[in-house]
Length: 184
Image (cartoon, rainbow, N blue to C red; front, side):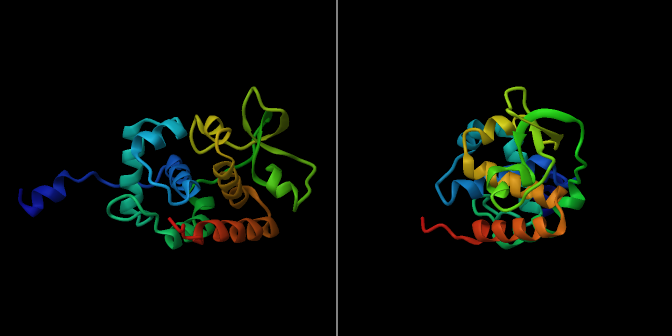
């Protein structure tokens, strides 16, 4: 295969998709444990092909290494802090029952008070609040099985919808978690 043929067969990068953020955060939540596409697919409730395509987009965006195994943590932090609210903006929607997110997540509630809750819609949820659309359809199911993953996604939602002080706090917390290199 000639170099030109190889370049032509590579998939075109048409920009990041919301689930790309969720997938990268799940890899961070795994914290250095060896992972396979099948395991990610099962825990995230996303097809293997969608995860594979997502990792390709993240590789092209320099958010994961060439082998698609190691997160480029500093690049991811920069994207979350400076880009996610512009690439995946969010306006709180209708009042629904759901799972708390952003400043309504239990971790954030320890540090901030608010009269209004934000939630990911879920009929089994116990909290009423304004809708924040999840990054992908089965996100609520996935966070119920992984509290660290849930916290990471809620912190990113703070960046998307929070006030300046809340955003600074969320960025600081994400920095602590994401900058932490696993000892594995």
